[in-house]
Every structure is written in C-alpha cells, then in structure tokens.
Length: 478
Image 1 (tube, rainbow, N blue to C red):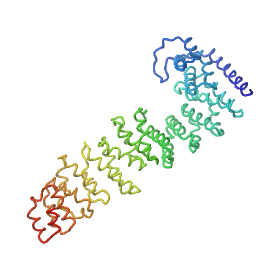
Image 2: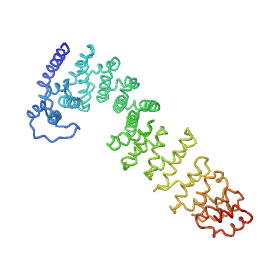
Image 3: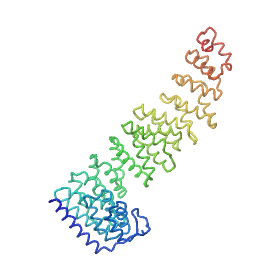
Image 4: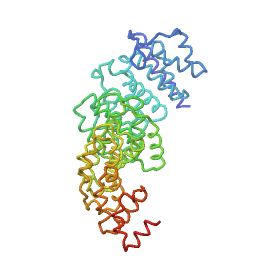
C-alpha cells in the first residue's frame, strides 16, 4: 500500500513538471526516428492520443511512434505515463522514451536529470529504480546533434557509475552516456568492463565517446586488444570486433556486415557446436565487395584460432576475394607465430586458397617455400594447380629443374612432384628417380607411371632396373 501511494506521488510529481514543459515549449520539427524527412500520416493527433489507451498493441505502438514523429507536445504526459507504468510492456516503454526525446529534447533534459538526481538520492526500491531507468531511457534516445550537450550538468550520471550496485541502472547509465557523447566518465566506464552484465554496453559506449573525442582512440584500441585476448564470450568478442572495425574504417556498417562480424567472431568460441554452426552459415553466405573490409580485418586479427577457421571457410568457398596480400602475410607468419601447429595449418590453408586466385600470384614467394619444412608439400600442390594458368609454366619449370633430392627428404612430396614433372614434360627428373637406387623412390615412381599407363614411355630404363629385381618385376606384373 505504501509503495502504491509512493508510486502515485512520484508519477504526479513528474506529471506536473511535464505539464510545465507542454505549456511553455514551442519546439517543432518534421523528422522521423531515423532523422529523415517524414510523410505526415492520415490519422490526426487526437486519434493517435486516444489510441494510446487502445487494447490493440499494434494501434498502441503506432500511436507512440507517430506522436513522437509529429512532435505532439500534448502526448508528453501520456507517454510518461507509459514510461513509468508498472504493467506496460518493456518494448512500449522504450518506444515512449524515444518519442519523449523526439518531442522536446532541449526542455526535457533538465527535467530528466533532476528526476534522476532526486530518485537516486532516495533508498533504492522498485518504484525508484523504475523511474531512474525510465529517465535514463529518455537520455539514451536524445539526438545529441539536436542539442548542445555542454549546456547541461551530467554529473549525476558519473555519480551513478561510481556508487550504484544495480546492474540494470548501471547499464542504462552507460548506454545513456554513450548516446549523449558525454566524454568525462570515459575511464570510469572502462573500469566497469569487468562486470559481465555490462561488457557489451561498455564497449559500445566507449566507442561512441572515442568518436566524440578522437584523442582517446589509441587508448581505446589498446584497451580492446587487451580485453579481447582474455575474453571467452562470443557476443562480447563480436561487440569488440565491431567497435574495432568501426573505429578503423570510420564508417557505419551494413546489416550484412554486422551479421558477418557476429558469425566470424563465433569462430573463436570454445563451443564446437557454435563454431560448426557459424562455419556452416558463413559458407552459405554470399561475400560481395561491401564485405571485403570486414574480411581484411579478421585476416589481420591476432586471434589465430579465429583466423585459422575463417581461412577454412574461404578455402571451402574456393575464392581469394582479392585478398592475396593478406594470404601472403599469413603464409610468411608461419616462422614467427606460435603455436606452430596453428600457424602452419593457417599457412597451408592460405596456400590452398591461392589456387583459386584470379590475380597475378607471387611465384617467387612460392619458390622460396618449396623447401620449407612445414609448407613444402602444400606449396608443391599449389604450384601444380597453377600450371593450368600458362603464365606461370616456365617459372615453375625453373623451380623444379634439375632434380633436387632435398625435396624428397619428405616422402609425401614425391607424388605431387611426379605430377609436375609429368605435366611439364621434365622427363630427366623422372628418369633420375627410376635410376636413383632408392627403393622407395624407384618403386613408387614405377607405381605412379603404371597408374598413368606410361610404363612403355620408359621401357628401356625400366627393363634395366627390373633385371634381377623381383620386387620391381612384381610391381610390373601386378
């Protein structure tokens, strides 16, 4: 009963203040929720005001939105009633907060700040908490480009950051500060990042403040890099990645790019089901030119597990997407990035992706990798695939002529090398292998030639090595 009376008193107090705004505020504008010019609706304001009490939620929500768009000042009181209601759905409260902010931003800010200060000074109960959060919703919907933020004293928001223990109030405060571009509590917000409930809000709010004050950019980037390395939540990682991309590109992201950021960020999850689902969705997603900057960001990421899994997706999609330079860098990192198991696997995937390149490949880089301990086999396979692109034929022939037995220290290299020798007509190398005296090289070269029906092409050599060699004879007879 006491709470009910208190709630009625609080609502009455705010209603009187709002009535004052309605009487004395001349503010008019013709812009919608997105800041664009609107087309006036057919329904007059008195119908919309009536629909605020409708049992039909569609009519109710339409009325809340349109009254804000039309800047109907008589709607302030009923909109505040919705905002402070104990029974109204949360979504409608958020819409009401947005409309209130649209109707009279300049006049409403001092009232909201006084209300927050007043109720924050009282013992926190359900009523006071509801009013504080409702007022913060309004601040979070103010269009800062339409008001001079410097004219207002937002110190009460700083006070909440340092004294409040309520996560919902803290989150609403952090969101409001970011929206307003109130830079002063930037570092205070960073200290709240350790609170799991506030992480995404802190990342997003701080990014908005960096846009307002560019001098904070480097500190913010370093902060994000540090917290990312220890983060395990995919949603938080997605928020960090989104902020890093927005800060580096300085542009707004399309819905598709936001979707890609979310799914690519999930590749670093420790949950294999989440990773598998993200990989499947990314493979099905069409990549266009508008998405390339996002791919560049992630291919430059220090998150080597995420990068490795993203390369697997690109390999499945069989396209470089014009990102050859980024693939070269990943290949060259194999000797510096640890653990070597992951960096070498990433380099192998990058080499595989290069097979599908439509650009001029850096053949000299691949030539240097022919003898690389970890990449030799995959590199030889990539060079074999590039033979079809005639422009590389002579350079590849130079790489593998004459025969270098160092390449054959890894036995797995033999078959792809034989394919190259055969494709380029380097018969001397095949003959040398048959006459090598190494049982593994001779016998497997023979088996390879037999599978290609080419025994007759080397009959003289084969007859010579098969004399008194029962194993060779059995291979020929089998």
